[in-house]
Structure formats: C-alpha cells, structure tokens
Length: 179
Ligand code: HEM
Image (cartoon, rainbow, N blue to C red; front, side, top):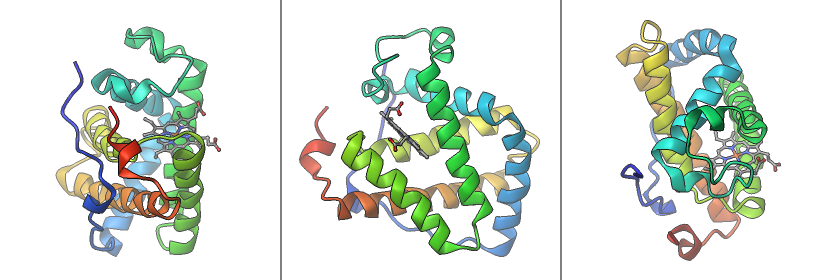
C-alpha cells in the first residue's frame, strides 16, 4: 500500500537557511563514506522509493509492473537511474561552495523531469525523505542526528531549486495533482 505523501504543490516548498560551514563539512565527510557504495546505496534508495510509493514507478516502463524488490533490483533501468541520482548528488556535494554549479546541475535535472519525463515534483520531496531514511539505516554510525539535519537542509535546497525550475518550465497543478 502506498505510504502517505505530500501534495507536492510547488508553492509549498520552503527554502531552508543556507548551509553553515560545519554542515558542509558534515555532508562532505558522510558522503565520502556513502559514495564508496554509490551503486548499492542508490539502488537501495530507489527500491525503497518504488516499494513504499508504488505510484512513483509508473513512468519507468521497464519495471512499472514489478512488485518484488529483488526483481526490481535487477532492472537495468532502475540501476541506471540510481547511478544518475547518486552522481548528481555527488555533483551537489562537490559544489557546496559554488551556487552557480549547483543551480546548473539542478536546472538540467528539473527541466528533463518536468518537460521530458513529466515527473510530478512531489516525488523529489518524497525521494529526499527516502534518501535520509535509507542512509540513516545503512550508515547508522555516520548519519547522526546532526548529520541528518545537515542533509535535510541540502535536500530541501535541492527540492526548492527543482520546484523553481518546474515553475519556470510552466508545470501546472492540474498535471501535478492527477493521481
Ligand atoms: C535527485 C533526484 C533525481 C535525479 C538527480 C535524477 C536524474 C535523472 C537523470 C540524469 C535522468 C536522465 C535525464 C535525461 O533524460 O536527460 C533521469 C531520468 C528519469 N528520471 Fe530521474 N532523477 C531524480 C529523481 C527522479 C524521481 C523522483 C523520479 C520519479 C519518481 C524520476 C524519474 C525519472 C524518469 C521516469 C526518467 C526517464 C527514464 C529513465 O531515464 O530511465 N527521477 N533522471
């Protein structure tokens, strides 16, 4: 059964305060460990997303009808997307001090998902929660409450930037609420 989810309306995305230097270091240090298992961690995150929020897999033609997590894990399309998600997060982490580089990475992700893939922006918010959940479980020693709160800020910034790109691209509530 689908877990509860936000309504994903673009005007409800609040921009968090900027990351402090201490938070940036916590993000970089924890990511250095997580990124060593880039593909495994990425697949675990996406499988959790698609199991907990089945409506989020409807746009992936190769596995939209698959329900078994073990079978999902074997999907090349899922693995490819997991890799893309993780490498984009890596770009964000590498550019925490370069707002333009971060904005440009998120602009291309936002435009592709809004215009080409027609992904409801609410899934970016949902994915952020799933990332925190899975990393918190898999890296208990590393993702302390303080580190998790720094990540929450970074992911909220990501959702905010993506929402702004969706708005710019003319995404309408009509298509975002159709479910
Ligand atoms: C941090 C978040 C995400 C990143 C960095 C990301 C990254 C990407 C990239 C780089 C592509 C290929 C883009 C292109 O066509 O030029 C892609 C494709 C796609 N993404 Fe995402 N994505 C994210 C979140 C999501 C979410 C939340 C969904 C939906 C639940 C989603 C659904 C799709 C779909 C349906 C495609 C096209 C099919 C495919 O390439 O397999 N993405 N994504």
